[in-house]
Image 1: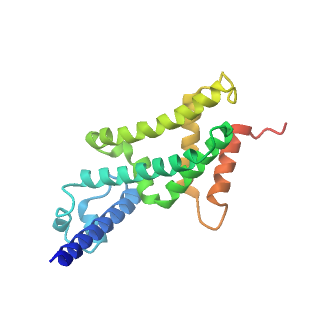
Image 2: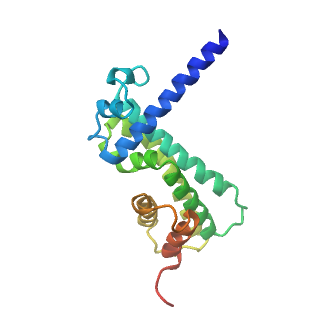
Image 3: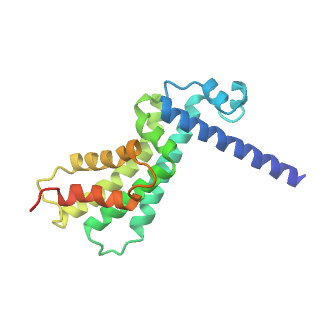
Length: 203
């Protein structure tokens, strides 16, 4: 009896994962507004009504995907930065954060793409729930940049708000052009941090 229940639970879990994966792929490709539940069901060779056994609505689906994408980024970045010694130079802190950010983006590309590209299309209630995680992540970067500026590693005249938006925007844009077989994720992160930190002018 317990074995049957466990088997059923695992089956439901795997089906939910398949639905989430297919939904994330379609939201990433077609946008939230351009994707209907029947499209997701068709991609899975399921009846649209069967989706409601696992998710109440398209809103619940996209919220779950949004949370998975954001939590994955946060966890990957925190893990890398927390592993650094307390006296790690500011540039290296940002570099490790960038490496974690890119690894998370490209590891669950459809999930992170959905959370980044489709955020503005999502219903207000979904955006509000997702904002808690987005704010948590942005506040992590704010803290690192403020600490770097206080140390004198970033010049006082630098607008940290614009700097943060530009840096994260550059990292997020990697989703649009990255392809395996070229530069590694770490090499791309090193180049992007280098552009912002060291500049490109030949001194």
